[in-house]
Image (cartoon, rainbow, N blue to C red; front, side):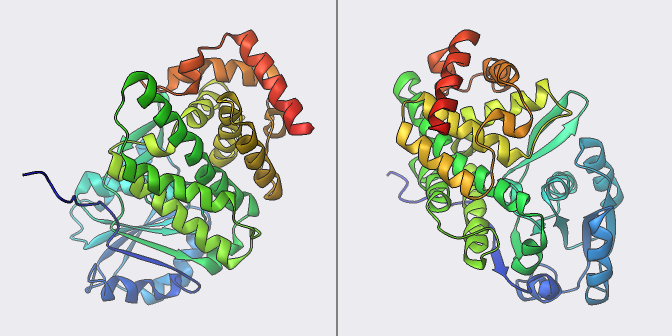
Length: 353
């Protein structure tokens, strides 16, 4: 008999609303995540101190752990500190680096993880992946997705607008990633998970066509939901495929080749998505991405994130090396550096026309 349904890995609960942060203790108790209040809270050494001062009186049973950075070493240290603490759950409270470190540490010690986001810069909020700096540069580590998601819109609204815009770039890049996945299916026979594609592409399309501005509550809610959908899509697929194609290969190449000049992740993958879409011949869609990115103040050319044409050309040529075995428009076209330079010049001309 065929399997008639499947279990979809997803958070047990999701709270996206103004004031959610101050209700964190009640949310954890109401959801039966931690009725005792015995939780380990991972925060940054900077803004995390202010959050701790605000929340500590309402979380008397919590132990607080400062995480120095988004490195593998910091995540391992966090796991070692938490081990043996008899906690009900771990809470990652902060931006993407803190949540990624907390996801890794929680997985290492066998604790469920509740992600409490203070910005919406990228889709690591709900993904089954921790991206951490290591001795070789940066690595992606498979982890269980968060058991719960909390986003306080009042807190997110206070984050730098660039972080919100970056999240939009990351979500919209799903459209390009899904197109690359489907391209691979046609040319290599790689299986495509239609449900994962539906979730990831819906997340991207919703942000691509949303008329709101970066401070609008409806846009922030839509962005938070889109980033969660992206994470669930990756869990369903069992890989980052629905949210990572040529767009992310280009971004990873920029990180590897120019580590001290990397822009925001969402800025890089947004640019990568617009260029990859242009390479696939989808000129109208690429132009729509460019218009939406400009509307939110995102970069649409390499010079706007501090890279020359030659550097961007080098990164695009190197990009397939960042994900061996992954087939995207870059692997399909197999462009030479001169071909990439010419294609990028055509893209810039289209952007500026």
